[in-house]
Image (cartoon, rainbow, N blue to C red):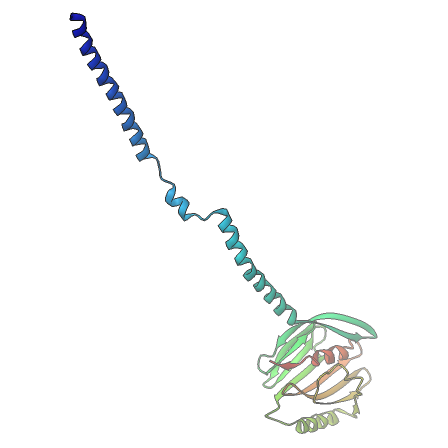
Amino acid sequence: MQKKLLSVPALLLTAVLVVGCNTSDKTEDSDAQKNEPSNTSAEQQQPSSKDKTVDESQETPTSNATNKDNTDNSTKKEQEVNYVQKGVDKTEKAKESKSATQDYKIQQLPGFTLSQEEPGKDMLVSNDNAEVFMRIEAIDASQSSYADAKTSMQDYMNAVGEISSLTSEDLAAFKDIKNIEGYVVNFDTEKVIGVVFEKDGLITKLTIHDNNELDLTDAMLKMAATISKK
């Protein structure tokens, strides 16, 4: 009987210990779950790599389109110009330049500088010799007439010297021209050329001064043929 009485407290003590251990384990598990960081919201906010791929592929066409537009614009502002200098055929890439005060633009070859001479007149000057140049006067067709511009040019050229008319071959570079006339006065080593033409709503007068040393007449005429309204 005494043995039985002793075993009951032992059983009770064992039960208490078991319950205590279970409670401790549950508490630790619960604490671990509380302390464990939750990644659910972060995972929901971050797009999957598949979604990123889709987004990037959708953005690419816009970037490509922008690059294509920039390339097209750059190409339109550059043009290859063929000309003859001292009997040698040359090809150079000209870049678009715009008059600061007049309503025209021109494809300008390297080796020249475009600047204003006075209101209504620009000078396209050779960087090698300032005495070799092309004067440009572009007038809106609504403010003048081709006949008046032609008469003015003839008067100027007659004052320079004995004039000869330029041939259609000399002026072959000018395309889509409504009207055009050209004159030349030759000296021993120099020459003066006057051209007046109507194109793109502009009446343009050109005065070219050149010499045999540089012989840039053809180059300047080829540039003049690219003149158009802004």
